[in-house]
Image (cartoon, rainbow, N blue to C red; front, side, top):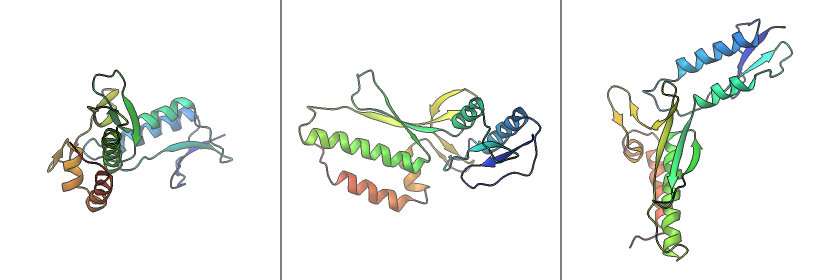
Length: 179
């Protein structure tokens, strides 16, 4: 039995043939390392599986976790500062993170405006998985010419989806008012 690597989203099957699942798994780890440029924000997640000669997925759980942890960003949200609870939302892009954070902020304000909550003091942000640290770190973007660690500023000044995000933001915040 031999094994090959397949990208899930594109269904591309790579030409290299491996004699063991472990060999294929090591190659997937190399692909992830090569794709995981910290200077580029991750806008898509590339997931790989290992298939056998019959096209069956034989990827083991350890390999699935390696792929999962190396492509991650997440929004963190604390709806009430002082509460010992943080809400996490996995996201695929900085732009998706901005939408979630705007929506959560508007929703907290909406609840306050309609006397669902008596008050609120929220906070949130975007994190990315740091493979070297093996931990979540605050998101940043640095391509050598531009540096951003503020999601709003990045989306306004650098994102190709700036207009779309401004429209989304307007729709969310026109429903609330700040005292």
